[in-house]
Image 1 (tube, rainbow, N blue to C red):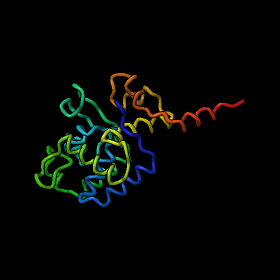
Image 2 (image 1 turned 120 degrees about the vertical axis):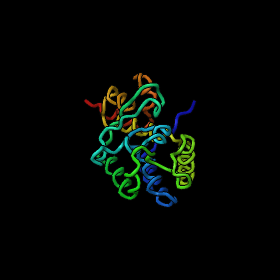
Image 3 (image 1 turned 30 degrees about the vertical axis):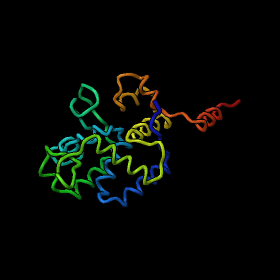
Image 4 (image 1 turned 90 degrees about the vertical axis):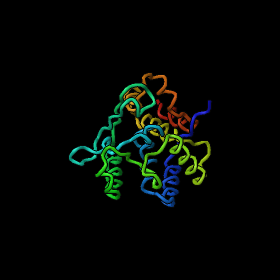
Length: 193
């Protein structure tokens, strides 16, 4: 099975530029960033509720606690949210103040039905955006793989990445990390005499 493409910084910038030209650019930007900055799966993005990201005092949470029905697995999980992603979530909520009135409702909603999205709809959105950005071999899982690979490239230990990725096995985490010829060449250049 071929794995989803890991995007480099230029491709991610190109993807976000395409998002600016979509009809619901704020919503679509947040969907992309939840994948690339927190490693959320399409099914998890679709299931996010306002109360998952917003505290009682209306501050953006630094940790999202997902219930088992919101995740791929059969257990509750926690997602650590970076300051950058917290800022993006805050901007999104500020632009859509109606979300504050329905904390039980979905964070990301369809304009037509005001309901949340299915996982398949999120996957279809990613497919559309990648086609528009002319990025081949990418899927809704590319953000998650890019998140995990970027952590690895920055020297974060595989054990910490495993926790952030919410994998039960370190072997699974290691399969997500992309290794290219350029990365191999850069690695051997670190060794000298």
